Length: 422
Image (cartoon, rainbow, N blue to C red; front, top):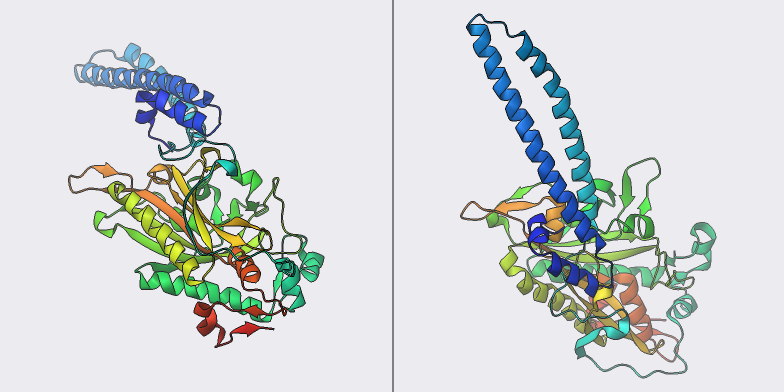
């Protein structure tokens, strides 16, 4: 969340930033108004506590002098109830302010294009030559089934739409992508993590927009836990409430996990494919760093993913994402989109975000600098490989006219030397 002091001192900046995202900014005035009431309540409460302390001293002096303290005792007896009422009001007001502040998005970076749709995204760079669209190219799901390496009918029968069976060489290709991404990033100095697949609500509130609990997350019935939507969430949330050591920073992690999303909305889920599904595999990059270093690491993690897709020899472009499409956590986001020849368009395969200190404040993650000043670190994330989307790109770009699939050269060692799936 944003710093309350920043909101107090820069309400116009906050409102303008929210409007760039095409959101209503009414909660800013509500927060400022409630914050004034809260500070007044605390002042009045402190005065009451000070009064209680003064009376306690007067009672002690009176008793020591052998005087009658009954009137003072009667006066003192009524104060604890008054203090309790103040404390309860303060607690309720703090909760109300917190809920409102959790809904105020991060400040939109000045370089973010202002717009409401994908058409407003700005291309930053492009690599590779898009494969020509051919009439014989099959949709990736149909092509995978024709090779006997995926089954969508049986998965739908037992699990519903949005699930799939990967079989044989396609399942191995999925694992090859995971190993390739993990090995590449470990060699770059990232620590490998396999996180929990469930998170408690308190931890989850630190890393996602509250509305995601209804729209995206799967809740475990009867428990205060949710299946994770990406490895990023537990990898960042693990530091909740901690005071890190400055010498630990930057913390650079690469994590693999299954991920689960309800995918409610206009996009829906694939019925015979793996691009948009309820369950998928992701390798994620996370960095926790000093504020002055975050843009350097934004470039680093974006470049890491670029290199992975270049090594796979898939045509890609990097897009600066328009303001309305940003999550409330991100100040700026770059997506990598891969060319899908069967669909004759580029499609998002990874997403890179700088959250500044927004998540760290929500999770109360801090460190003390050399001057002993408390600092909230910056957090960044970028998908290294979402294997289902990378598989779609491979199935479309490496599909051959004879009905076979060529395996990207860089993955051949992970496939036991196999070069073609027939």
